[in-house]
Image (cartoon, rainbow, N blue to C red; front, side, top):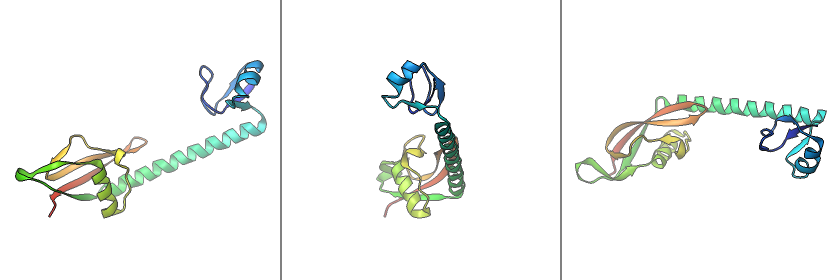
Amino acid sequence: MKVILQQDVRDHGKKGQMVEVSDGYARNFLFPRKLAIPATADNINTMKQREKARLKQIEEEKAAAAATAEKLQGCVVKVSAKAGDNGKLFGSVTAKEISDALESQYGITVEKNRIVIAEPIKSFGTYEVKCKLGYEISGVINVVISEAK
């Protein structure tokens, strides 16, 4: 019997796949647990439409990530921090601070977990911080750390 899996099933396939299983396995295990549905014409069409919608959503997310990377190209984010003698900061500048500054200065929203700081920023100066936007698209944020008045 052909069925369309609604969830991943070990040794049979992933969610959304159409697989061939024995009648008893489908009737007694997959259907009662809502792990699969019969592969009727309507269900196959629904599966194809969902796949098409999923691919369209991925394309939109890729386009949004590329647009964000393009916006980040010329941005210089200014972050002010308190420091002691010798230009050493109290603590370090975090990804959240950079994300918040980027949002307030340019209106570009980048989640803090997407900002990758190679080594802690503990002194004044200019830094290049990598930003992974997903789908192998990344951008660079130029960050200027200045002293808080």
